Image (cartoon, rainbow, N blue to C red; front, side, top):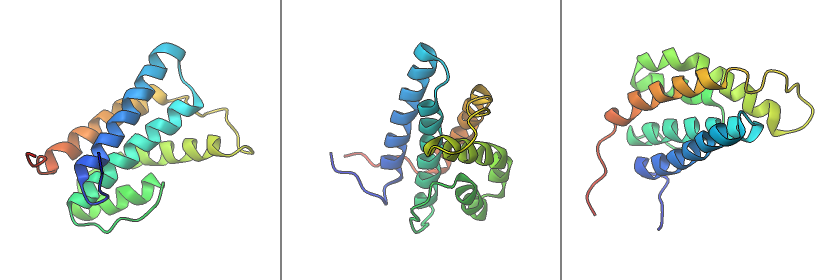
Length: 133
């Protein structure tokens, strides 16, 4: 299957895969650093899918804060997800490379996971459905 950066549904496919894996990891192994990174990656891909559906020119960034700011240009209610973006971005970077403090990484995982569900619920209805093949 060939994917496209300009197809929001391809972004959603890859986001849902990361979400499925992090949910499985949470259930079977508990909170892990990899699970936090996958949660951040899922949020990033859902946001990028939303943004490309609005004609946004793809920017290769992992900063959820920046993506939320971009989303607010199309819908200011996305600002309510700023805390999710801040926490996931900080925690993802803290564990991405050695040298940072890992004490708080994953400490609010379940809250972030719930907030991500709310973000997804705001994104998916705002994107036209996938065209039939």
